Amino acid sequence: SSDVCSSDLAALNFDFTDDYVSVPYFARPDNFTLQVWVKKDPSFEGHIFNWNNSANPHGIYTDLFIQGGSGRVFYQENDGSTVQTVTNFSSITDGQWHQITVSRSSAASNNVNLYIDGILINTGTVHLNPQTDAIRIGANDLFSFNGSLDELRIWDGAMCAGEISNNYTCE
Image (tube, rainbow, N blue to C red; front, side, top):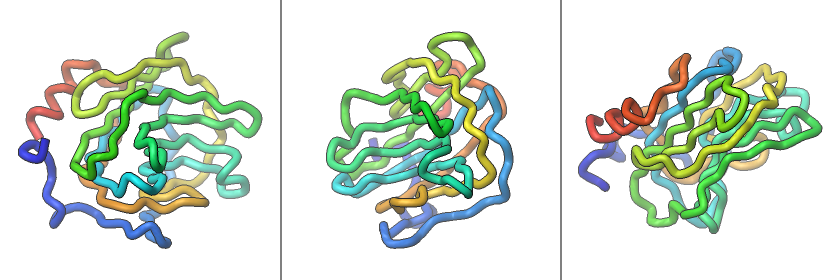
């Protein structure tokens, strides 16, 4: 809901043309939590955060994105030969602010939890650990984001459901 989210004035705004943020590379931890507020145009695919291999950015990556049209959120890892994905089965197509959280641990199974607005939406197993060397916020090598991103955070550790819910309600 709009009363618990960020203002458009403080967010990074992307126009789906060629906008993205490049940050110094750091290796994706085995255990991490990525959390971000998003408000996007529902008709376009929107890549939120992308670790990639600069020699093969569309073939080797870890990516968090929202599919165009369907509004489904995807967390995906591709090691160049296999793709593993956790996605939601509902959609974010209302053009409003939503908090998306991915919590990934090194557990043998069900190691990725996907949350939308502080609620666990889906759980799955993703264990590819692609070899990456670059990071983009708001794009992958094919698509830029069309909308706004705010309060993107990455923690070195997999947060539990209570911590994620708390971050949503206390923002």
